[in-house]
Length: 387
Image (cartoon, rainbow, N blue to C red; front, side, top):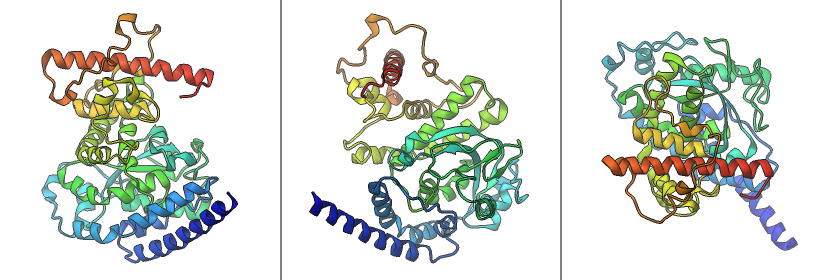
């Protein structure tokens, strides 16, 4: 055991050295998003050395992405007329979305959030805690410059929180938005096809930084975590708190479009077997099909399913946006005749291709399965039972 530990320690040091070299080589281009976000990177001291090793491996895997991103962006010619009638202005720079698209080949618009990141977000990005969806749209370049100023002045843990696991307090964050609230994170908007074609090549360093505070920390699981964020959006809006009204409706609809546009990449990642160690299909279809797909090892966060399902169903606009009633646990358990309805092993088509009565039956099974699993997890959490 001592010999094995000694060898592992040496391997960890080699990974660290090679990762540092790869980072240096990958951040040479000052115009690249990786270089720009690297200046905001949080150098974490992880409690578990395997997380440091996992991050070093990701750095090595992602270090060569800048050249591909640059080539993809260079060939883009956005139709600027598509942005003339869009009332999106960055409150930091004063630039309209047309100016953002015209004056830069890589800048794009984002929306602000307040989140809490525990260390295990490195392994399980769907566990990220989303505290608030805030108002405003920002040029990402302006957002990054302002964040850099705040980080240099006040330090990481009092601004974005590092990996403490706690959401920064009301008077802590990167900066205040138009609604007077502090934010500590941002995600891209879809807006329209031309805008998204600029976002798409840069999505990996964006997600890497959002989840791990390192632009080279991307892992495919983070694509699935976008649907968790969408699930949080629907849940917050349905709950009737401060995230409601025209802004909430617009943001949910826009972010749904972004998630829908990335569905192919997310599905390919599921099919590769890299997510949970098994080749996966549509996660909602699997969840309905059999109880084994409802375990935490297969479905770490139920809000991921909510986001995925409503994205597939096309829910987004309107007050409440079609958010499922199963977000809120019922006063009584499902009726006995409904228990196990989705566990009979009958293979049904994914909901996107079902029609008429088959679609209604699939919806009924989905709701029963979701409520059952919601109750099961609540009971296990209350009594601290193993999952």
